[in-house]
Image 1 (cartoon, rainbow, N blue to C red):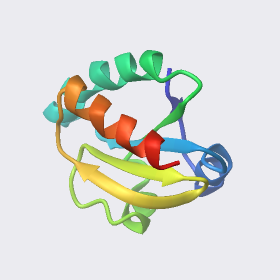
Image 2: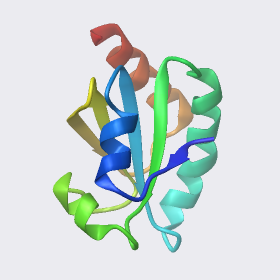
Image 3: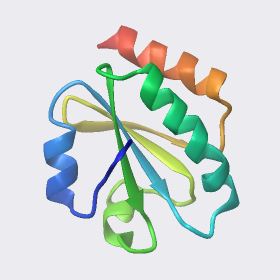
Image 4: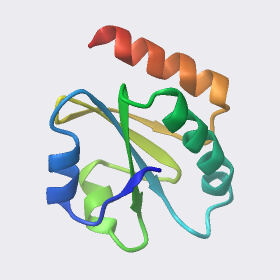
Amino acid sequence: MAQNVTTQTEIDTATTSGLSVLDVWAPWCGPCKMLEPVLSQLEDDYDGKVNFLRLDVDDHQTIAEKYKVMSVPSLVIFKNGKAVEKVSGYYPKEKLSRYLDSKIAEM
């Protein structure tokens, strides 16, 4: 299960090495609810390869603003502690899986 983060320090600590995905979501967001089971499946598929985190934008707007999140759901991609990309909107599992494969290959 993805680690729920609530502070910038938690994000910094959790993303220090390897590939991490920060799911910025909101409880009222329909596409976020659709994306949640997809990310859960990807967590199983990429166990040990990708670190998954979750941030509730309603409770932590300042952190979301730091990563220029303008809409939810948004996935902020970290490589070795640095936010390098952002993907916004709902994507099916197959498309996100191909995307993560390409990011892992870049490591």
